[in-house]
Image (cartoon, each protein chain N blue to C red):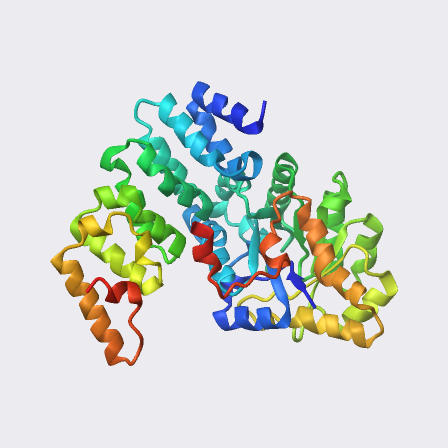
Length: 167
Length: 280
Ligand SMILES: [Zn+2]
């Protein structure tokens, strides 16, 4: 039995074991192991939101990233939005980009979503990586990007092409 | 010259330092948790610090092409403050993290009974987690502190113990005990590059580890490089220098099984944005 198969069985039998297994899962179980454990947690608990949140708050940057990426598969409704807001407050492009994945795009309110997109522009996260940008693009976001472009031009600095093409 | 700085408090340093370190050949660092100059008054303050060592600081280092790992512990100075004792209860879950390559800095500051208790508790945690231990030796009463340290770690595999901040008076006993020997090269205290070379001539390069221990005090992140140059000037070979400045720290922290240097060893371009590359 592989480390991962054993860990999944442990979590399905006793969800509390996930807190000691999840931090080690990437090095012991390989890529994708953390997503597997989160899936097992979702199966073991009728409402896994509290456990997923605890894993995130106790996680390092790598754990947090994989939790954000797994949110769309976990069927948590808007309960995990505080995690998305937390990731958007960081200065880590990986976390900010993951926050604007399918889950964030589905649940963030308009104001937070626009601020997130603008933050991506500032951090040079490609806008193509923002899930559902076409669907959620609105007049206010267009104005914010236009103001950003004007500020760049006034400073004699180039406007990124992925901003220009959306004006 | 490729350099692994096995003890440097990057949280206290600027991005200019990261640039200068990269230019000098530094490709990997270990940042031990220590005290911040200002004593902390509660456990949460430590946890935010640990989180920064596991999140923001490695991210910052990666932007300058440097791989960042850390060691975590309740440091000896703050071990004496009962308000911080709860850190020991939180440590076990932190010691599971991927980039934690040792327990440290542990050891003595003023050699109090509280320090004894916290030191021994953390040695037990290290054994439980299969991690090596980075031991700080006190600045005051150093020789007595080093002797007492060696007594405390006696039951452990000496290969899992790095005794740091050594000098001419303390190196001998640590050499004899079979532990790894750490030397912090400072602008005006502890060790300087010439004295370091003299010690290497006397004891050889085996189990010898050199660090800048740079922090918020008067210190210099390029001292490791200066030691490498002083070694070459004194007739040591490139292989000797690589052994002290790269292979030895890699061998010591590698015992954790958690050292990942694939990116930096292949010399991949970091300007191409490691960070974004890592997400897709
Ligand atoms: Zn230190």
